Image 1 (cartoon, helix red, strand yellow):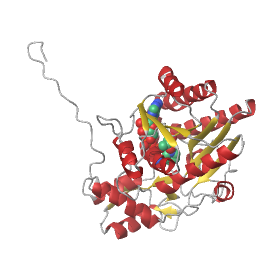
Image 2: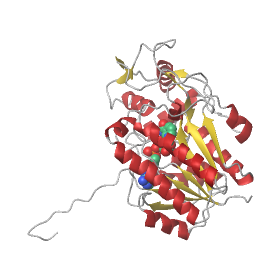
Image 3: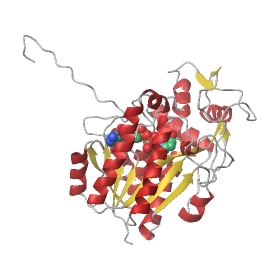
Image 4: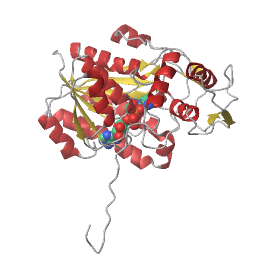
Length: 361
Ligand SMILES: NC(=O)c1ccc[n+]([C@@H]2O[C@H](COP(=O)([O-])OP(=O)(O)OC[C@H]3O[C@@H](n4cnc5c(N)ncnc54)[C@H](O)[C@@H]3O)[C@@H](O)[C@H]2O)c1
């Protein structure tokens, strides 16, 4: 096995992608990032998130505005670079939207992946880290969740795209021994880079707890709606395994080390802290570290929402040598730093309006 040099990052301008790029550069990799800006901010020069990642690390990133559904475009990028491994973040991820527009999700997430795998194969690149999700487990049969927990009984289309891709990867690795793939099942990524320069700034409508809570703390939204206060949990609210995005990013660097040193074919790892935190607990830590007050409004449970879920991350510890380092306090402090330094997120591209007078602009 040879040491990797060039890593192609799909969805690199997005939330987790941009944080991971920082860690990849700091670990000494060359990064080629692509994104179609479906859910990331674009400016005149490309991606402000990636420009800031360059600022943080003092290292350059090669960036292409490109869509995984545009096969010739992606093929050209692989022709130009000697890609050793792909980290595949690019996907649409809004659960609600996925239920309303299933074809959009199947097309983007499944076809995007198929195109990528075919292009990788034609360029003799068989190494990949895939962004999967704990959502593939559905309602847990036991807690904490190990990687051997059954998958597939999922209640939403987004989650099914992750599950179908994992199944596809199993078939691929069974059919062709050359593939070397790690699927990372993320639990609930939150927080931001401690510099406050990069963070989560989705362009699509979002309902994620921490960005929403920060908007309430900033006074941009009046109240935080909590869905379900009658769950069978100590305080009645849902329990999740929140993980700092920089811990998650480091998990990808650990995955690359394993892929570059061993031919493992296909392995799956949970990336979580192993600790469940309720919505109410998270809100109270956030209030404490940010010295703000978050008004709450309770509404009925949402269909398909799970009572409690947290990871058993022992396998990642044993095989990737990875464990989380950041506390819930740090998740809140770092997210708040990003939000207060950038209350409107990244600077947005100003659309130039063209005034037409008598047919001349
Ligand atoms: N954030 C979470 O809570 C979470 C949890 C589990 C898994 N994941 C997975 O992790 C990955 C990254 O998530 P994120 O939170 O950074 O989301 P994100 O939306 O911030 O990043 C995804 C990026 O992919 C880009 N993209 C989407 N479709 C594309 C296409 N066809 N071609 C090129 N670019 C495309 C988007 O513009 C976006 O910048 C996703 O695959 C997501 O499903 C996220």
